[in-house]
Length: 418
Image (cartoon, rainbow, N blue to C red; front, side, top):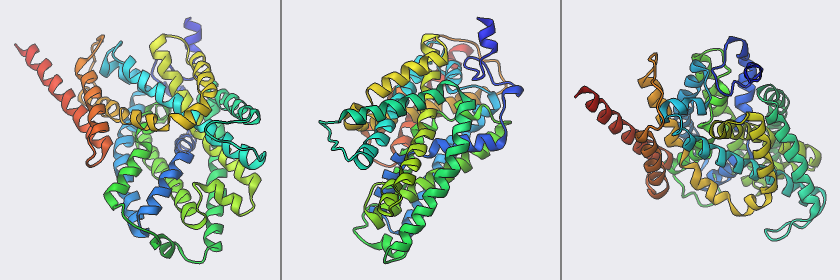
């Protein structure tokens, strides 16, 4: 058992040591690839429908700033401590209390992994094979595509951070370059410039609402930031790389989605490339785009389930991959709404990790079974985030979670002082 732990290149249950730290370029590629997800292009489409060009830019900047503050803090913590999200949760939620955030992140990331597989397989089945795919019918060839993609993406998560890095080195430049070229070609084929094209249609969203969409698009996935930045050289490096990579990656995805919507009428850059008769490049970009996020999602799920069940990360990655692959098509048609509801539960986890870490930075944290103030914070924060429709849902949830955690800390301090 000790031998297996020593050979654990993913440092599942211990801090990443100096030998395990990665180069700045490798970390940048992994973090940038994490944000390359087709679902973010859907948000870009919504932004383009509701905002003109300059309001679109301001929404990106405001939402990006909020995301930068949240994910940047988690990036710093992960890199400085060398600990994963789940190991940090053991300190702030307690040994058994950490099962709650681990279960939440594992469930949502396995769900998004399955959705991502279908997001690749269904368009390819329609365009490449000419198959008719509906919520009630999926030909067997489509399931084969799901299965092959599931095996490949599960394999990269199985082999850990080294495999994730290799995939990112291949996918990130390819998606960024080909996607940008397709976007420029789409603009050149249009009859108006960006500003003029953005001005068309009803613009009824507003900058604040647009920024809310920007934040909501990746705030849940961003909660898993420590799982990757713990391999960075230092806390400062983890912070800088996270902020730059997330802002750049998300902005590209929003632009791809917005441009495809206003010039072609599609949902993402895949449809732009199809309309430009770049079919095989479109399939390549779609596959690599989803792969870079899906293997990160499954890697995160594996770490979370390993914390709960005490089995190896590799074992839990396989189990999660099988579940996500088998349920992929059903998840795509039936579960996206539920996953978005569950996404609101993760920011409260992140803010409690941040508060606990900086409140106890440099101190010896005594081991406990359950921190009930942290648990109450997540539960209450999640309820408020889902039910209160004012402002930013994720920020509302974080504010309530922070308040619950702070009150609990004050109560525990007053009891100790008696």
